[in-house]
Image 1 (cartoon, rainbow, N blue to C red):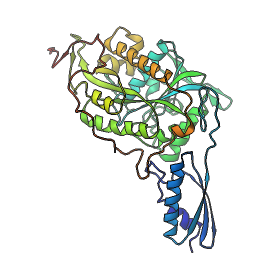
Image 2: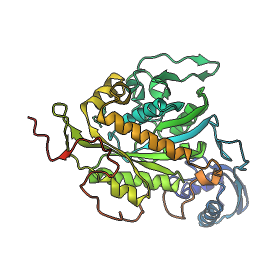
Image 3: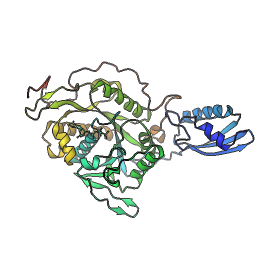
Image 4: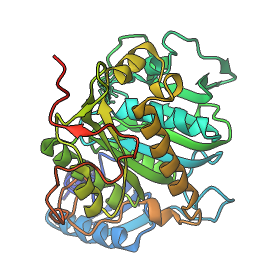
Length: 399
Ligand SMILES: Nc1ncnc2c1ncn2[C@@H]1O[C@H](COP(=O)(O)OP(=O)(O)OP(=O)(O)O)[C@@H](O)[C@H]1O
């Protein structure tokens, strides 16, 4: 006869619908009671979706019957009470924040943090009360990019006050950790850290909180979507086709977590020569149009490789603030305006179910099962490229 340990071991085989991890790994198995060949399994799940319960019942029953147990399931689910204006029903651990925008990328190094910083500062320059939460636990470089490296955090009671630079409130694991300290975390530690960064930080009332996510699709994204209503997702990518494949994974994840996609930022989409100021196509330009079309969204902006962007990042002086007349700054300003318009238009009345993973049985939230792109990417300039862009050329001609 199976005992509680055997049953828990067996339950490790049951994946949470839409995700690659099991209900045991997510900590959803709250209680197991055994009486002879009968057992009562209590699951604490965060989704109110009926198909999640149906699928889990089917899978748990089948897996326990394989070891001779008749299973009965008991689900604890969120109640979904309606809350005030900005919040949605169910879990929302940061209700003072009106709109949360998740900035993601399919892979690292594509300029996600640079984009987050410049979009946030641009949104603040357009009159919004803005914050940045650096949830890139593996490489928290927002403090450096915002000129906040080494700054002390003020602690009030048992909560920390965000730092502020360029009118933007900022909190990051990078501020809370020793400089250079590597963090190798997984699973529940990431979940806890992100929840703490939302709950234990004294965020003021914010119009928009931009969250710089770790690259990829995983625990951090799931935790965030289950802890707060995410109003919009932004995907940052470079225009090479290999990067676009990773972006599809990231956009699929938004879709499956029911996060509306505000748009795609095509970063490093050309090179602006500091000598002659002309723009050359290096990695390909405009390849994101097809990607945006496929996911029924827009290209928020195409940002060239510009040495001043990197220098601004290294020096903690965002280009959008320090060189507002530059081509890149203007593109960031336009992209931020599109994000503001997008989140302003979002209906606040979503239910908790809307932000929960409700993927069909057997489909992972992190899989790339989406249809092929509607059209092959064109090599032309992004349709969203502003009129002020320098002419696109094969090379600028400078030596
Ligand atoms: N458009 C650009 N022009 C020039 N340099 C850029 C541009 N975008 C990003 N960079 C530089 O590329 C490097 C990587 O950028 P960033 O840290 O923003 O990427 P990321 O996707 O957040 O990386 P990670 O995955 O490590 O968090 C940085 O040095 C940054 O200054």
